[in-house]
Image (cartoon, rainbow, N blue to C red):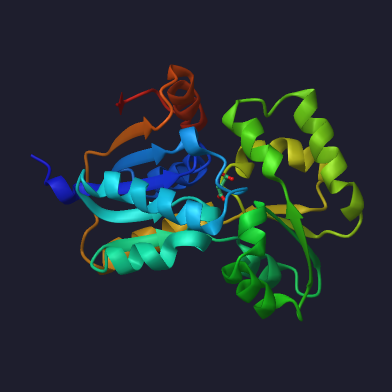
Length: 260
Ligand code: DGL
């Protein structure tokens, strides 16, 4: 029998955090994950900081009631708005939050041009300002807000002309200026194929999913909390439509296990 505190809770404003769950599953197949997408309240990135804080705390509370040994904030926007409050509220819990992989890009392309594509909230928050300040003397950093891409992914419309046109327009001003593009929102990796085709092979596309999964494993290992299995995934969503759960499993790339 599994102990109740065996789950790793993972959450996002919607289906985007599944891009992080994929890395977590790959690195820790023996773990039990409970994923919560707050699609009924998405997008977070165009809300106020206070709103995102309240929504994030409410989701965390729901997940905590299921019994967690760790919480992964698989949303850059929620990390910038609420990570401090979450740590304050649950001081004994392992909490890992994703943030734009700017360090990775700056290390790989010293002196280069780096685009950071994220939600308007992530890009205007203090947390990102501090991160940017650390690397702006080493490379040219361009902030690229892309709130519409969140909704395109939420509606499963990544491979549409509408998305291609939107992305072409978005990247037009940066042609020839980028060596790397950081996907600073967990929804965006689901469109990385389209983005790659528009930017061309000379621009490396990076995201923080793998780093977040590694950090989670490191923290669990350090605390002696890694599980050997059997692994499990539960997916829940605040939006009652069955399509959103279907989309979630499709994005995870594995057959459906359990859901609410
Ligand atoms: N996926 C989220 C992130 O990483 C936010 C998307 C949104 O709801 O605006 O920032």
